Amino acid sequence: MRRLGIGSALGLLATGTAQAEAPKLAPIPAAQAPGYERIREVDLRADLTFIASDALLGRMSLQPGDDASVEWIAAEFAKAGLKPAATDARGQPSFLQRVPLIEYRANSAANALTLRLGTTEQSWKAPEIIGGFRDDADITAPLAFAGFGITAPGVGYDDYKGLDAAGKVVVVFEHEPQENDPRARFGGTGNTRYATNRVKALNAQAHGALAMIVMAEPGRKHPSNLERVNRIGGSAKRVPPLPGQALTGDELHIPVLTVSDAVAGQLLAKAGMTPQALQTAIDKDFAPQSRALPDTTVSIHLENTARTRGTSANVVGLLPGSDPTLAAETVIISAHHDHDGSAGPEIWHGADDNGSGTVGVVALARAFMANPARPKRSILFAVFAAEERGLLGAYHMAMHPLRPLATTRAMINFDMIGRNETPSDQTTGLIEIPADTTNRLNLIGASYSPDFDRTVRAANRSVGLDLDDRFDRDNALNVFFRSDQFPFVLKDIPAMWFFTGFHPDYHHTTDTADRINYTKMTKIVKLSYLSAWRFANNAAGPAFVRDPAGQ
Image 1 (cartoon, rainbow, N blue to C red):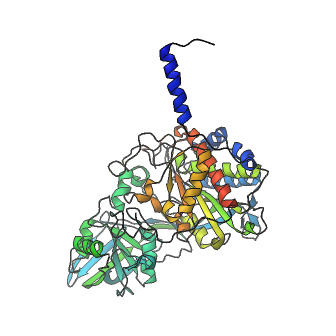
Image 2: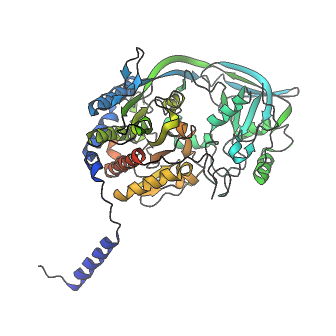
Image 3: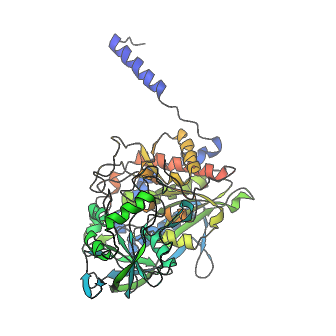
């Protein structure tokens, strides 16, 4: 044995102490070990290098590059041995759930909002108003203020109580009341499912409104949605802009416009209170301030320079459960395959967003099918279409489920699981990013199912990632409703988004496969494998909390 000097001996002692104090990873259950070992960094690297390659031209929805990604995923599901989970037009088993889409290009030079106050009239176009709609529209109607546009019986709050919105256009604030109060009934400082414009628009539609106009809260402590998008740059500022897409059979039938602060002040001129005073009154007493706006009429003109129909697909494969009774229940593992395409020589490769999630789902399909033991519940592997155009594939499946949602017990969604979180224009000054994120994974949606969160953390004892739920307490970036788990949360399904965080390459051409942290990505896929096993085998699924409260 080689002799050590005193300094070397003390150093070895310190190292040994540190190693002794480091948490020891729990062993992998023997019945799950073969599949766990099938998840390999070399495979993730090879698959992602292909999915994010120049050949797929950024996988823009309804374009050949994304169609190629759909074919590749379906082929990999078939090779793994999954069963087709959908049917084709002839009623035959298929790995593709068709997603019919309408693509449109808004004519921002012509689209206009006109306000009439008594005998005076004023009109605005872009950039004072932003938005488009799949159909051309001309709407003239009285205007009403509908607060935050929320109806939440479980929270005891309803902006439409006492307001007749039928045949009117409603104007609403973004986000939710009291969002800067950690004890607020709408989930404290985090977003709940009532905060998104889609939910508000569906609520306005249910109350008979003809259109909805969204304004930023005047007392906000975060960028407005419009300001947040502009901070990203990249795809958000492309010329010409990316086209809009919508589901052909979408349940939302009314247009939604977003207006600047200056326009919002004019729209509420007859409210009897300033916009700031209205928000202050709502926040102070948790009481709606909705009202008709006397002598106030708006006209909305929307048209498109182009409008076409096309079909994308959710790629879906099933691992049937092994238990005769529990096999009827479902665990979903998901991601989305599309990104933002190309423009001339520029390609938005989308390696992290969401090539990483796509190949992660494929890796899990291989892992489960390579494992001799099968979980008790069935697992549905789904890679969704058109997420970048508004979570369209996920909304389509939520409206047209392939397996009953009532017996869907849990959902793990991957969206950007390949990078280290680093400061960017989108996040600077808004959120704190830990100094070292090389081993960190963000869990989005824990407040809606603490049981789900505990299950993942228990599985993590075998993997050793640093798990972070801080985005559940943040309202500046709208993270909660920006990925494909959200349409299923709206259906009361315990669902969590696994997310490694934002970085300067987000939605830029520089989101390439060579920048991925493959070591961390492999650990995330392995954690998901162990978590999905628990969801599929535990006696009961995680409970869902319909209206999580603040702290």
